[in-house]
Length: 466
Image (cartoon, rainbow, N blue to C red; front, side):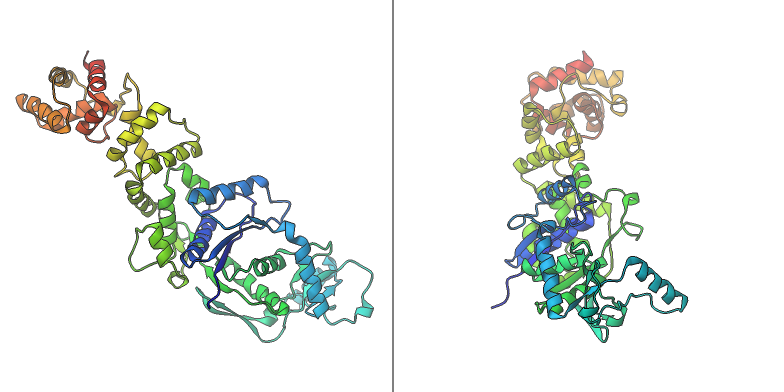
């Protein structure tokens, strides 16, 4: 029987959830969910100076918005410090680690001397093979007794086999002199204790993997399958940073991208399944594999993100879309919708959900249904309301009093008036659009009229033509 897959996402709560971290979480989630496995969350909060409850809350909120559910409760790395120390002492007892009494000044002096002689500055502790009877009564760190010959090979599902010469790796510190464990030890102990079978993370951790494998080996533990994924770069090919725009996941929610579109886009960012660009969650879970991850850094492309989001928005059910729009307004610190506006927006969704690429664009298209009289007409739309056009709208108003209120009949009535004035239908649609919505970019005027109803349409026209 094959082993059950267990993946994990292990962010540090020192700031917002970076979009690169969100993609790492997504890859772990997809791999676990697609293979009937378990997806765990560990908060790596050992850096007490920089870890904040606010940052932890932001991570949890970001994962919730992106729709990545994890199994069980989040695990705090800091709370497991005693267990990490216990493993360090176990390695000491096994002779796989040793007490190092070298001070920071001594280590620096060693490095300066090595630099002066043109030798490697990799610290080699004089305490590695010292007789315990020579140990002073002084503070010490616990170092891993790493092999200093041969090589450590990482069999990586993305990078292939990556070889590190052991003489290029130092004996890493596992326990500091105050008895607290280091991050490098804690990660291995936590992954082992959590039963993690696949470590999928950014390739900036690749060198860490070489040293972490040595801990697994020292403890006689099974080494997980590694998959180190390339980082996300900006459109210019440089490492993603604030200068490229949004890098925190919550910024994308506030910019109005639907979570389904973000999941699709981020899955495709650095992973491929043939030429498929648009796919559902079910397809992503079914298709996702480690072999499809590319080795080259992926580039963030906002145009592609918007196109994917637009396609997803058109397919989201109206009730769900309404809930997501409310979430967007809260994230963007905008006025919430009133109950009446929610009813009006739901009715308008079939008209406005195609063609919009963000919730902001959708709301702008649906503005005609959300506003109350008198309609605020912007400068561009006002140009269509010249005296001649107002006169035609007055005629139209009279005809609309008795017209049958269907889209076809409304279009027919407008067409007859346009023909009588020897005008194209567009010449009537522009002032009609301005009077009803106050904007030049809206859904079809006849769709808007049908939705708003006779009473509201006549009232809006009366406001403009008297």
